[in-house]
Image 1: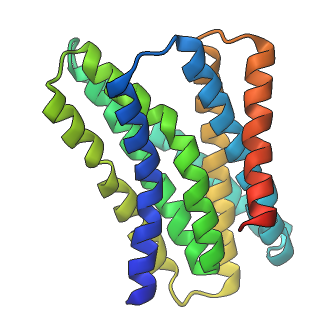
Image 2 (image 1 turned 90 degrees about the vertical axis):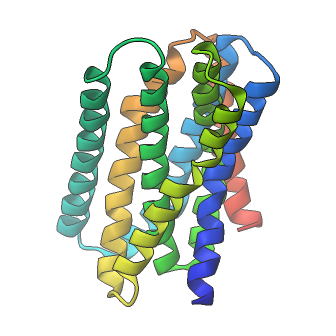
Length: 242
């Protein structure tokens, strides 16, 4: 049970990133290109998570055919998740509902973060901690965007803060599901789950995060430095701290 409680504490880290981003949105307003730069940094962190931590473990343990199957299933799950969010958005009208769809998208992302942390912790407690820390940085822009949207729609401040705090729920649910499903599983099954997570994370980064990061129109040199800084931060953290 102590291992599970530790996992829940780690799972709160991604939600903490969203919460910090939300508090930042409450206290100041920044130009759009700053959000774009932050999203590019988050994309760099995500690519570093895949290339530095996840793929080396997967390649050591899985035959190629199982790697491909697991990755493809993760990619398919990413597509289904994106389509589900798009369907939900199409079913609502204008006004404040649009801001709630941003909240739904961020919550779905936190659910997948929790699954990733739960799967990583089942393989190695250290990997779970690294994944949790990486998502703190990656989730700052999402929390900022959510609360900025609520401010624009004139949602009361108390409701905005309660909404930000509620980000902990999907992260904890995802981590619990990942942990209990993989608890006691074979090494091959655990690493197949990591390959699944790679599919989800890569597709979400390439198809969703990077295009969103490009929308504000940050200068190329800013986006490049931000992406490289995000990658370098996680790589150095993994090597010398994790």
